[in-house]
Image (cartoon, rainbow, N blue to C red):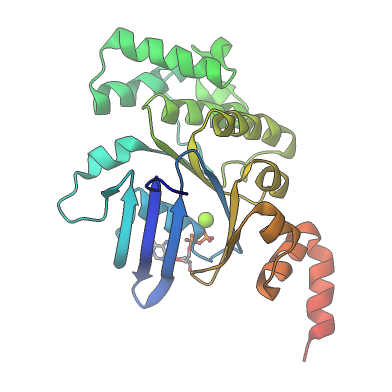
Amino acid sequence: MSSTPEIHVRDLYKSFGDNEVLRGIDLEVGQGEVVCVIGPSGSGKSTLLRCVNLLEEPTKGQVLVGGTEVTHPDVDIDAVRRRIGMVFQQFNLFPHLSVTENLTLPQRRVLRRGKEEAARIAAENLRRVGLSEKADAYPASLSGGQQQRVAIARALAMGPEVMLFDEPTSALDPELVGDVLAVMRMLADEGMTMMVVTHEMTFAREVADRVVFMDGGVIVEDGTPAQVIGNPSHERTRHFLSRLLDPAMADVEETEKGP
Ligand SMILES: Nc1ncnc2c1ncn2[C@@H]1O[C@H](COP(=O)(O)OP(=O)(O)O)[C@@H](O)[C@H]1O
Ligand SMILES: [Mg+2]
């Protein structure tokens, strides 16, 4: 990685009260790179993403996006957030607005785009996620997978430099996961810089340039998917992966190891 990383996290700490959730995170994501973040529940994955786009204020350390220190006290938070798209497990669409209106509203409010331009960009991005025919539909009439693709299109319509995904498929029925992952794969192929918190190991193996394993607020391993998923060097990573692949077996191992 020769040029400035698109996302640069330096010695990042975050506490909630006396609960130290991030304990010295160092991470670089290069331009066009896809980094999947894996790890057990409570390890700090969401907090890390939320610190990158300043939904949480770090206790200590720095975050730079495109070379700008977003954790600087004088930073324009709204300008930072415009550069970073975020997709959550819950899609957070406005139920009383049509799909198109869900995409045009933030463009008009935040970017001050005119009606026609916003509508044109909404249509472009609905096409990218394969949902042109749902432009006038309301969220409640869509499947979870379609709603999540609308949420991705809404983020893309803002023209972000970076996309953050926090378990985007975890709330979906299994048969709807593939369509959302396909859209994310397309974005990766187009060269979008992405950080993706996910339990989808096939996606991580096939799409990620790097996989980061977090546990207890630290990065335990950071490497290629072949290294981190295929041949982990830490016991904690191996244990996490074995539980993910076969939860029942991991419980047996735990019991056998017991006191
Ligand atoms: N807003 C918050 N207030 C207090 N504690 C929080 C908050 N957000 C997260 N935490 C705590 O931080 C820890 C890590 O949470 P999180 O980043 O959501 O982990 P993960 O996404 O890996 O499951 C958990 O113990 C959680 O309870
Ligand atoms: Mg989380």
